[in-house]
Image (cartoon, rainbow, N blue to C red):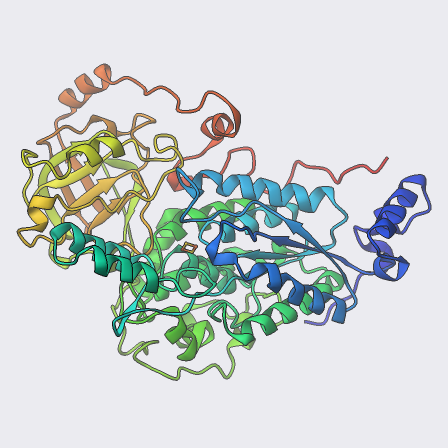
Length: 576
Ligand code: FES
């Protein structure tokens, strides 16, 4: 796009470095204390590189070096790079769940970018919630921003078998519980499943959200699928650093990139990728920051018309490395054709459609053509009904087709601990037609809405060969999980949603084609139960958890804090 460029005096950082005041003297003398001089900070865009590297985040181990590549690109283009470390949300290690802290990273990103002399930024993330957290923060500040994805890790291997993050953990854990593999094999799988830097290489939340970021126009075209260990990933980092400097001069802000059309592109891509249900919550929250209306129905509507094309586990056969070699996201988006808004603006200065010109699919089994999709529909449905008045979601592509219409008797667990204690008990009154219900796992109840939505199949049923059942909860589910799991039930049980009133033996009807989830208990009985129901005690009496509990919105609203939606309300900091 050809557009007028800012002058040096119009840069945000000019107020820190370009004026002749005592405060500016302080900024410049302290910059010199760090070894910089006027050549670094005079009239150059200051690029904040928000880096979520941490010793405890295996998906971001390469970010410590990769940030130097970003800086190289910024220098090449005449900018002044400054690294800003931010909280790393490490999916495997952070408890009770990284989702509790997504909004904290968003707040930290927002305040870092606002309070320092930042003209533009590179957001370095990839492990699950880091992508939405970083983008939500930058969107609220509305400074020119590019998202640099961590890239997927390389494929795992064990005895000639390809291993995928998450999915194979569940699969082989089920085999270990059933006694078909032992401790030795389990240890070997542990050695082989994660062998390089990078985020999970299945179609989990990480691959879903980095693809969504590229579809939104916030990542350089073709970048999201490049494996972290490839030299091309270093080149992507350099190119990102180079480009963000021009993005500042051209004054292209997230508010210009993030529109209803770009969010629809992201939703369509999530459907075509067979993406994680977590994307629903994150995209709704991100849209809220951009002041774009994105109701749950948009996901359902696009799911009905967008075919699933990416043949990636857990819904398909391959991994992200194969997807990249087969043409990557550009190949997939080009195949989607008119299902995308091709005139959407992207951060490389071209429209989405221009970016897709010349894109090819090199392996039509990995990235399917539209006339040979994995499934005709995108694999996600939004349901409503007496058990979920404000909605819930199910990943139909990971569910058993014969269970998509099912009525069964509820077997209810009040909490994760309750489920953990009783699920494998011999005397649990359950059979393959039962509907497993877990409550106390929502945004407030979890707290933080943990990924407990794939309830384990009771051991005695596993041993009889049962591999799937209808499961319902107010929890989320990892994108690498599978099964007929109804998730994100809103309002959650902790907040008094109907899920709180279900009892063992109640009939629950799941009707995915009809988009319904109903509890067949008469109104009078439900009223009686409601009168008996007591609001659980708050989990946190202090600190961030208390703030979280006070301001978190429900799943259908994206679980953002109510006071963080939108962009307005925070003035530019005074410099006195
Ligand atoms: Fe980081 Fe899966 S653990 S993306």
